[in-house]
Length: 184
Length: 184
DNA sequence: GGGAGCATGTAACGGGTTACATGATTGG
DNA sequence: CCAATCATGTAACCCGTTACATGCTCCC
Image (cartoon, rainbow over the protein chains, first blue to last red):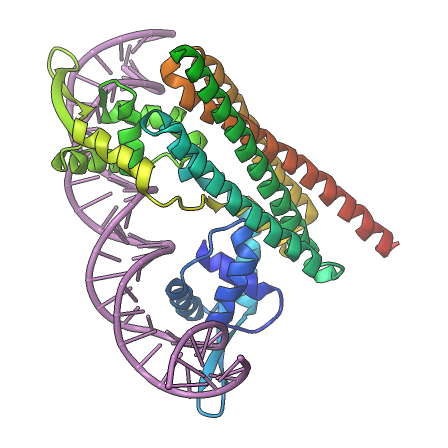
């Protein structure tokens, strides 16, 4: 999967270093797919090179040193296209530890639960802002129409997630009030 | 994480076998957290027992054999509560390979993309139906108020995801039309 | 001078999966 | 009788992470 993600990043023309790829992953991929660790990127690049899916070239980083920049090969593009075309679509993987904590609400105080959900809300807000920023940035270029589609999707995803957090907070408040009634 | 999930399942009273835990994971946990493989559940149970977080008891499965059922210990409950209470909340992990494929739309035909999104839509629809069913099932019991909150959240999550898929399909159609215009 | 960013990697580990093996019971 | 469900586990593997090491350059 990480391999496909990297090939994907390289498939929008461009020649990128491992470092570059990490940055691009962090500000586009991560909206819909967990951004891999830096070390993993370098590992995958080596593997992809062995497979002939990318080609590397040394290019001067400064006067003293070189850096390796990678470019997708025809074989790489084919492999990637074949994946999109033929592989069975797996369901998205979601590991929502925030909701897991809410699920275990009977073990925590209502204040703590609210704190958790509020932190999550902030996270959503930040992602939403980044996605909106990204939508503006990628505008108007023919080449980016699909990425554009995806960041727009991400925008609504995080907006929904934020709104759900708000509803959750309201429900937690309501539960608190009910509990008070019982006590009184 | 899997350990906490299992402790969580065991924290709603009940004594459960590894097999039971897999079933429960598959029809409650999976709405917000990836359901672990069966083998992993047995591994974690052993580990949790070593740690003293669960206790095991042999109980007759049929006339010939026994099965091991597990119960959360006080130490286990404490550890779980401590996790909810004190651990920093990580952002949810999302690995949306469907959106990754859309992102790579320039490598696929519009028909294929629609096929992918439609399959995803079906998945969402199925999850939504299951979540709705689950909401009805868990109703009215005081003990399940938090799980109830979470399945309600899941319901809206998958409804949103389905609606987003619909919007995506509409946008893909629109793009197709634009492309036709250019050609003509 | 020092911190941030550029750039690349290794080593150890962990968490999780698939595939497989086994075997009894129940229901159609 | 056959398939599905109950029930538990091992072995091989893989994907990916954290932690660490290194060293340059640019800017304040």
